[in-house]
Amino acid sequence: MRFGEMLREARSAKGLSRAELGAGVYSTHYISLLERGQRQPTPEMVHHLAGVLGMDAQILNWWVEQPSGTDESALAVAMHNASNARDLQDDSLTASEAGYAASIAQKQGNAAAWWSMANLQAQALVALGRYDDADAVLRTLCSSPLAGQKPELQAVVLARQSVVLRSRGRLTEAIEAAQAAVEVASGLPGPSVVRLEVAFVLLAALSVQGRLDEAWELITEMHLEAADPVLPSRLIGRGAWAVGNVAFRRGDVEIGLTQHRLAAELLSAKTNVEEWAAFHSASAAMRLSAGLADDEVWQCLQNAQLGRQISGTDEQRQEVKLQEAHFHLRTGHPELAGPLLEGVEATGGLRYFENVSLLDRLLGEYHAGQGDTPRSRKYFQRAITLLEEAGALESAAEVRELLRA
Image (cartoon, rainbow, N blue to C red; front, side):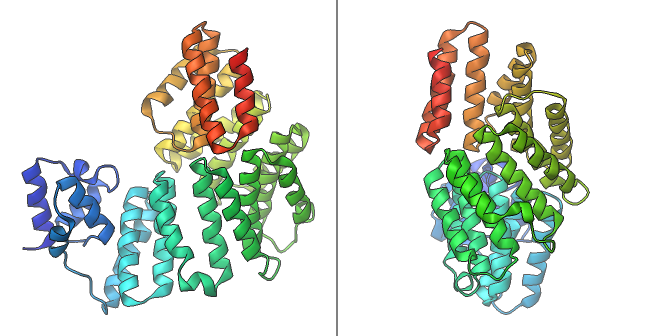
């Protein structure tokens, strides 16, 4: 009996739906593809499916029809399916399809295809907030012979590891990974796009942990104010975005505004709507954290909301709602902020630690304004604990002052 038929019978015997079998890790569409025999599972999928079905993984693995080690057309089809899933912006399906394509490429010894698909899988896993799974894939990429042969690939993977670690609140490790990426990229011939990209990642990690003097020193060394004319305008825009973030955190509001206005000119929705939305969401957050709540901030929020509707995950849309609530609190409209904050909390969809800690902080402020001291204290303390565990001590100190007040 084919694997798909056996899987469907086992699922039916357990009384599970496809969504329950996927358990938020694999989409119902991909489970359907498995059951119809149009896909074969990777070892990671077998382990997951066996766990949900309560079966021995070895038994389930006996049903698997191994992909051909020589059929190049199978790899081409798998890579095409992964690319289609990416174009459809279905991160769950992309992660599954790319993982499957990577497994075929590995069996065929096609290092370039394996790298491309594993890298795409990692990207999708990060977008889904499955940081542990993404980290495992990235570690495999970083330890591969291809990374050792091509410094630019190693630098990119290290930088992506840094982003994952930062998202999980492991800031010291994030800085170490980004510093390693910068060191690897330092040997690349210039002007190097990769060298600047990994420097932006290091800037973000340093500034989130509050090491702002180090971040500013790095900016000075990068000479972004005299960017090489051969560099694309998009990269210069990303540089202005990164510099503006550090300036806002340092309290240099005018520099932050100047840099973010430049970034807004250079980062276009027509070129990359996802990046455009991410910038406007981040710019609103930075401006609000600096005490600004004006028409420009509101326009950033409108742009972010529009972009996330076109191209965004549920978590990213919740993030925009969080910033909108922040705006309403700062403009003296807690009656508008409260329902938004409670709605975001109810979804439980935020994973990035800065967003989680901000949600707790804003809920603390909201309930303090409502005179509910016990709830206010609870949320403030949660934010403090999360920030201190991440090593963001200055941010934790700010919230502690709110708690004392």
